[in-house]
Amino acid sequence: MVTSHGEQHTVGHPTFKQYVLVAVILFAITIVEFLMIWEKLGIDWETSTALSKSKIPLLIALSAVKFGIVISFYMHLKFDSLLFTGIFLAGLALAFAAGIALLGIFSGIEGEPREFAKEHAVPFVEEGHEEGITEEHESKTSEVEGSANLQIGVQGNALEFDLSSLSAPAGSEVVLTFDNVSIINQHNWVLVQAGTKDAVSADGAVAGPSNSWVPPDDERVLAQTQLLDPGESEEIRFVLGPGTYQFVCTFPGHNTTMFGDFQVTQPTS
Amino acid sequence: MAHNIETAHGADHEYTSTGLNHRKLLMWVFLSSDCLFFGALIATYMVYRGQSLVGPYPNQIIDIPLTTISTFVLLMSSFSMVQALSATIRDDQKGIQFWLLATAAMGAVFIGFQVYEFNAFKNEGLTLGINLFGASFFTLTGFHGAHVTLGIIWLLGLFFVARKGRLGPRTSLDVELMGLYWHFVDIVWIVIFTLVYLIGGFDTGPTLPLAG
Image 1 (cartoon, rainbow over the protein chains, first blue to last red):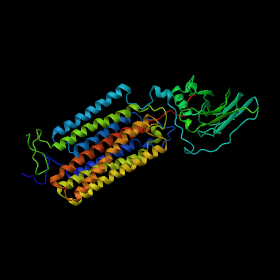
Image 2: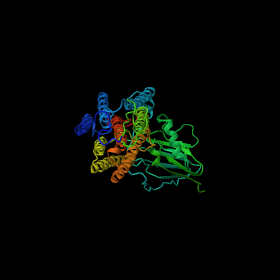
Image 3: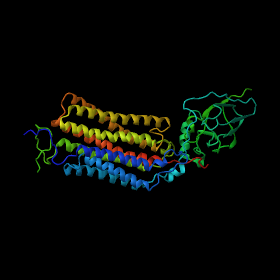
C-alpha cells in the first residue's frame, strides 16, 4: 500500500518551535564560548599565554552539548531506531578511544612544547619586507695584495646581509669581520660551496644552536663565524682557492634571504 | 516488528532484516566511519600541539573572532537544512527550493571565510610544509572544507531536482539523507572549532630572544 505524505517516522518529530529552540541554544552556547576566551583576544602574541587549563573542560562540555543536540534533534537520532544510535556511537567511541590512546602514547593534552621542541624550537620573526624583493648592493673588493679585509653587516632587523656579493684574491688570507647590527636577531656568516647554502642550512637546523646552527665537520662549509647575538661582531680568517662560493646565514629560516656570492679571483701578478 | 519498513517511497517495500531503510542505514554507517576519519586527523593535530620547531605558531596567526562568525553561519545552515526537510515533508515546493538554496549559500559563505583564512595564513608564512602546526592544521581543516564543498554541490544538485518538481513527501528520504550528511559536517566543525581555535588558538612558540 502506498503510504502518502505525512509521518515517515514511527515515533515523534520535533516541532518547528523545537527546531528554532535548538538553533537558539546553539547560537547562545557559541556566544558563551566566545565570551570565555574574550579576555585573551587582542593580547600581543609576544606576551600572550596558552589558555588556562581550567577553561578547557568547560569548553569541551559546552561543545559536547552542541554536538548532542544537533545529533538528537536535527539528525533525528532521538526519535529514530536505536540501531542508528548504536551504529553511530560505536564509530564515535572507537574514534575517541583511538584518539585518547594516541595522545596517551605521545603526550597528554597540554599545548606546552615538549622536550625536543623546548630545546630546539626557534622563535618566529616576521619579515620586515616582502619576500622576493631583492635590493642591489654594491659589492666590495679589496685591492690590497697579500690579504683582503672585508666587512659585512646586516640590514637592521631585516633578514638580509648588507652586501649581496663579496670578493677577494685567491691565495691571500681573507680577514672578514661580521657585525650583527640587528637588535633582535641572532645571525651567523657561513662560507659554503656554491649552490649548497640551503642544504647546509637544512643540516644546520638539525645540528642545533649549540653548533651555531652549522653542521659540524661538513665538507661544504669552508669558513664560519659563531652564532652572534644582536650587537656582537666576530672576525674570522681563511684562505681560498679561486672560484665562486656562497655565504649564508644558517639560522633556521634565514637562508632564503640572507645569502650572497663570494668570488675568489686569480690574483693579478 | 521487523518488517515495518520505514520508507517514504510509496512504491518500494523491499525486504529488510532490520525494518530500517537501507539507504538510511548506509548513511549512518558512513557517518560512523567518517567519525574515525576525522578522529584520526583531530588526534594527530592534538598530538602535534606544541611540537613545531619553527613558527608561525598558533597564537600568532589564529583569528578567533573571524572564525566564530563562520561557525555561526555553519550552525545556522543546519537550521535551514532542517527547514528544507520540513518543507519536503509538507510538500511546500517553494519552501524546499528556498531552504536548500539557503543552506548551500551559507555553506558557501563558510567556505569563503575558509579560503580567505587559508590565504591570509599562507601570506603570513604558515604553509602545509613549514611546521607540524601547518601540516596538521591545513590537513584537518582542509578535509573538513572539502566535505562542506561536496555537500554544497550535493545541495545544488538537489535544488535542481526540486525545480523539476521531483522532491516531495514520497521522496523526502533524499532530503533527509542530505540533512544527515550536512549536520554531521556541522558537528565535526563544532569539535574542530573548540579544539583548534578556542583551545589551541592560544598555543605559543618560544619567545624572543632565544638564548645563544
